[in-house]
Image 1 (tube, rainbow, N blue to C red):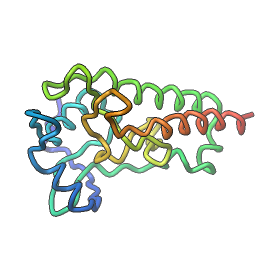
Image 2: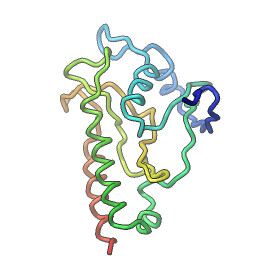
Image 3: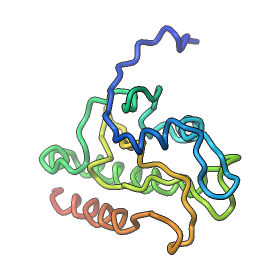
Image 4: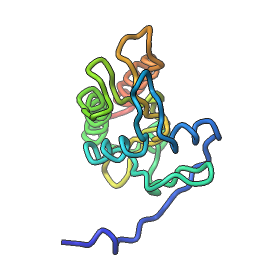
Length: 172
């Protein structure tokens, strides 16, 4: 078994605004009497679904995560180079990544809440070494399931769905 401490990770440092950094870096109050550590919940989610980019730490208004080498799914030129079988695989993976959010459990998430990515779109999905990965980790939040009480952008998911299906039109 390989020692994880000996593995060299390539890191990517993404600048985030001070307000977001404060939210992610602190013990956050997300509703009455619901304190949680964003990074702790995110790391638990990464263990649950390793298709999300791994976050190593937060420092100086930056989120330090694994550096991925691939292309985002909004890159039509690269997507059009893929065969039909690969495109079908990508579509299935994207739906599975989205769906898994609904089943994730944490001690900090109530029955009427979900840990969700609030910016789920092709620009935040990357094809890396034959796998689909979800980027933009700071978009994850604990969110109430009631549409009138949450900030989920359902339209982005449906737009992603339509664009994924359009990928198939360019297949022969």
